[in-house]
Length: 575
Image 1 (tube, rainbow, N blue to C red):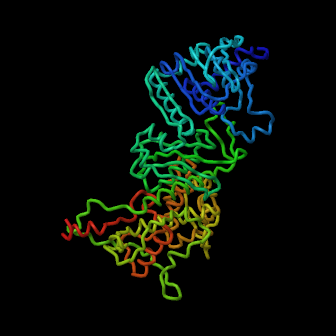
Image 2: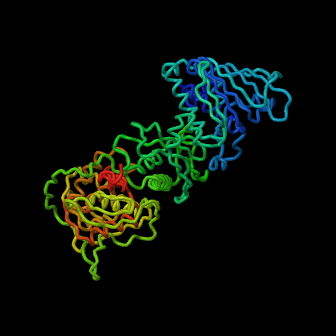
Image 3: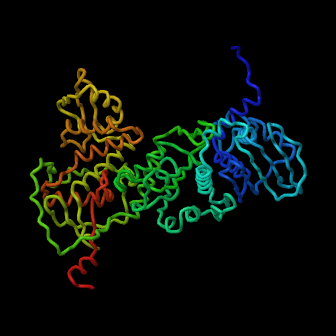
C-alpha cells in the first residue's frame, strides 16, 4: 500500500477519539474552558448519561464573533504562543483540540456573548462545517450544546456503558471540578433532576458538605503546610473515617485534577499504621508546584501528569498529612477496659535480649541516641498535644505504665519503639543522611538466585538507609555496613524476610517505606524483654521528645490512655 496523508475528516475523528473518551470527557473539557474564561457560575445539564445531549453554560468572557470559526479548528488556542510556553502552562485548556474534537464527534450549537457586547452570537457546527454566526439575545458568557455524541464515531459507542454508568462518571467528574474550583458556583442537572449545587464561596469544606454531607465535611482535618519543597493544602479524613477503595482520594496540582502514583502513595503512606490494610483515607489534596516542574502534556486528556521531582512531591504530601493527623489525634483513648477485672497473664517467654548498652556516665539512653536536629519534626510526627509522661514501670515484660497527668498511659514497648525507629528512618531517608554502623568484619549472607535478583533491584533503597553490600559469588552477599538502629538485629533474618516481602511487592512507589518498616520491626525491643527503669524512662522520653506516633507501621496501637474520669468511675468515686 502506498503512503498517503489521511483526509482531514478522518484525522479529526481519530483525534476526537483520543481526547473525547466518553460524555464525562466532553464536560471536563468544556468546564475547564469555562474556568479559563473567568467564569464564576457554571451550569451543566445532561440527558441519558450525556449521550442524548449535554449543555454547559457559563458567565465567562465569551468568544468574539470573528473568532468563533477559528475556535473550532484543531490546534487553535489563545493560551500558547511559543514553544517556551509549553514548559510553563498555567491554564487548563491549551492544546486547542477540545472544541475541534467535540465537534468532530457530535453536533454542536454555540451561543456566546463576549464582554462589552450588547448582542450574543449563535453558530452551528456539524460534520466539520460551521454556520455563519447569527445575532441572538443571551446573557454574558457562553453556552455550548452537544447533541448525538459519537454519532460520527460508531466504534466508540461500543465502549460506552449504560446511561447509568456514564451518569456516574459524569457526576464524579463534576464533583472533582467543583472541588478544584470552590470559588465557582456549580449546578449539575441530570434528566431534569438536580444532582449537585455548590455555593461558590471559596470554602473547600462547604463543597465537601454539598458532595458528602455535613458530618463528613466537619470531621475532616485541615492540611496546610509548606514544610516540604511544595505547598500542600486541603482536607483529609480522621483515622476512623475511611473507604474500602481509593476512590476517596482526590489530587490536584495547580488546581488541575490529576492522577499521579507517587502522590497517591504518599497519601496512603501518611496513614501507615493509622488504617488497617485494605482501608484507604478520604483526602482532597492540593499541591502548588512551579509550572516548569510539572509536565501536563503526557496524555491528550491531561489527567496524568509527570513531576520533575517526584520524590519532593512524595515527601511534601506525606509530611503535611502526617503532621496534620498527629496534631489532632495524638493518643488513642482506651474503651471497653474493665479496670477492676483480673485475667491471668501467661508467663512471658525469654526472648533474646536487646538491652540498652550503658554510656560512660551510667545512663542507658544509647538505644535512643540523640536525634539529628536536622530531621524535621513533621517527619517523626511530633505533636504539641502530647503530654509529659512520668514512667512508672513494666507489666508482664510487655507493656509500660506511665502517668500523663490526665490519666494512665499503657504503652506497648515493641510497637512504640518500632514506630519511633520507623519515623526516624524516614527522616534520614528524606535528608539522604543515614546513620551507619560499619562492620569490622563483613557479614556473609547466603541467598538464592531469585533473592539475589530482588536485592539487586532494590540496592539503592537499601544503601540509602545505610545497608551497604556487594555480591560475593553468585549466591552470597558481603554486608559492609548496616543502619545504626539495627546494630543489634539478626541481619540475616532481616534480609531474608525483607526480600520475601519485596518479592511480593507490585508497587515500587513505597518500597523505601516497606524497608524502613522492616528495619524498625527487626531493630525494636521485643515483647517479653525485661527493661530496667532507666530503659523504661529512655523510651518514655523518646516518645515525648521525638513525637507521638500512635500506631506502629503494621497498624497496631502503640499506646492507650485511660482517663482519670474512667478510673474514678471504676473505683466508685464518681457515678
